[in-house]
Image 1 (cartoon, rainbow, N blue to C red):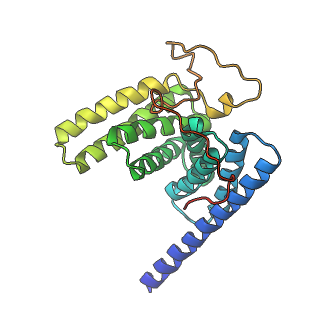
Image 2: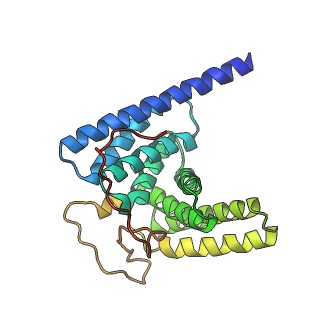
Length: 245
C-alpha cells in the first residue's frame, strides 16, 4: 500500500512540475510581449512556477529547483545569461522561503541546485562549488539576510559541495577537507562584495567601482565563475517556447 502511495505522490509531483514549466513558459511569453525587462521576465516566470508547486508537500529543495530552472530558462531567452546565476538563485531562495524554509535552508537549497545544474552541464567540481557559494549568497541576500549571514551561508555551502565532489572523485578525507577550506575561502571573499540581484536591476541604479571594504559590496552583475570567460552569445530562438524540466 505504501508503494502505491509513493508512486501516486511521485506522479502528482511530476505532473505539478510539468504544469509549473508550462505556466512559467506562458508567463514568460506574456511578459516579453508586454516589453518587460529580462530580469522582470525571469522573476515573473519563476513566481508562476513556484505557485504551481507550493502547498503540495514538496521538499524545499524541489520547490527551489523548480523556481531556479524557470528563472534560468527565462534569463537565457531574454539575453540575460551574464546574470543568470544571480537571477535564478534569487528565485530559488525566495521559493524555498515561501515554502517554509529558514534563510540558511533557502541558501542551502539554492546552492545545491546551482551545483547540480553545473555538474549536469559537465562542469568541474571546483566550478560547481563556486556556483554553489554564489547561489547561496544571492539566495540569502534575497531573503533579507545581511552580508555576514550571506557570507557564512556561501562559505558553508561551497565547502560542502567541494568536499562531497572531491570524495566522490576518490580524494582522501584530508585532501577533500583542504579543498573544502579553499572553496569556503573563495566563496567568503566573493560574497563579501556581492550585491543583491534585485538591487542591480533597480531602474536608475548606478554601479559603483569595486571596493575592498566589506561594507561596500561589489555591484558587478558578473558571477565570480564567469569572470575571465567569454559571455554566451544571446540566443536567437523565439523566447520562452519551452522550459526544460
